[in-house]
Length: 286
Ligand SMILES: [Zn+2]
Image (cartoon, rainbow, N blue to C red):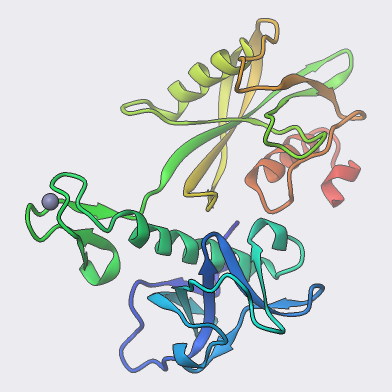
């Protein structure tokens, strides 16, 4: 999910700005949505008190086209009439992309507060610091920031008698039939490139070369930064890592599996590598 250029991420409401705006209200991981199923809307209200559910843990998340965007939590499990609680992912392709992206920032800011209420070093309650960007321990000074976990993603390609082929894998968590590029979290002191070589060999047992940076994208499930590369196959037979990889195989471009959602960088990466050899491939229009 990509924050739109019309969004200005901020930690505090600018001085003198109105209290009202768009409210990204969460019960656990689910967001409060108005409108209809086909046309869901982020609730708008002049103040928190005007929302249809009681809220707490208010946080400012930024300005979307000049409109204030707020994050808040509610303990209400049941949405009032005309509203619903839905997972952000279930709103893909229904809620406009810009609201999904701001919602992704909102839930991460709320999770920052929820999970760093106490100092990890001395267990003293932390306080909001630096205008909201960090939380600081008043006892020992330990300072924490919202968690962002860098992860690599790599799409391995080869060009042979069957034309271009892509090495993609699926985990048991994926929806039926979906395969994607390989991905894994970067470990301490590791470079992204080190991580790619290590994870690719661990997950599917092959060697790669010619790493080429493609792009990056924040992914709020729960707090990843996906850093995507293309790589050339350099040898080895596919051996799937037990427990991690349910299946991995080479896919020719005329026999592709179900691909990730267009909002993910995984899909943009796959489309880019297909587009290099077949700019009119139907996958690019999905
Ligand atoms: Zn402390």
